[in-house]
Length: 405
Image: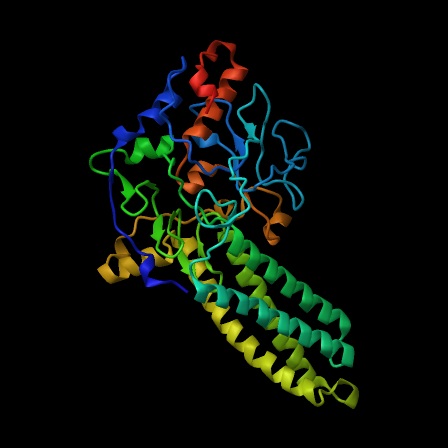
């Protein structure tokens, strides 16, 4: 599922180029920020009121701001986490460590593409990927239609057929979210976050810059030649999704694999039960249904084997922190045993929302969006400082240039 031309070269990114971002976070009296680029790609969420508390930011990958009425608040007796509550404890307010970033930096143009100016993320440059993605919908739709016909003829109990159709619907919804969700493209205005500048912005471990995009290149990101963008935490480019698999759509990809695997296993169980347990003519497949069942059986076996291998591949990546592209590079260089990557926390994939949201193809809310994505933007940092200044009258020295961005 990975294209060999997804691997690219990079070069050093000098920390001296980050003066605007460092000045914004460190300074409290304001200044001229008119030179900061305005091309950006940001999504709303949570963040700290304190402008130097980089590790406490809460960002969301959703286009719209979700409602967090179910969040547990620490300090309240009886508050806790459960299946319908968030997995974190947030304290939000003017004098609290968290703030809600409602600003929408998404482009408003109704155009398809992978550029920053496109309002709808969709890879239109790969015709083969478009055909393969459409084929996924065709095959899943065919299997659901076949089981509906079997239920109508009495070969399969209607209740079990309904469960199968629901699984197919969830698989297709996850496929659509994976295809049309920005996988984590790095904008032109991307800058390293505070922790990254402290830990990596040294001569021995310099920050890197993509030689193709001419932008900051976060760790574990790669330039996809098909999408023509740098993708943060990129695992591979999947032709079946017609999209890259990165930090922002990995959850939807895992859900698609899980629901497709469930569809395949469930269909084989139903058809096997009918083959071995059917004792009268009412449940036998006759005529055209026999041919449809044979095709679904072959399709289910192939999908089960393929998704099983991909689930093991993704599980290995989560447990080791090494994506598919990086693993192939390390194997080619015989450096897989020297890997220093750490396992990816499950909250960095499925978010910190209620557990039931993990099962649905909806955008996750990350505990620290900038940390998960590996970059921030000057606009996001400015809003963070303005939030802190609005809650602290002593830090209100912001110029007109800052307010005009």
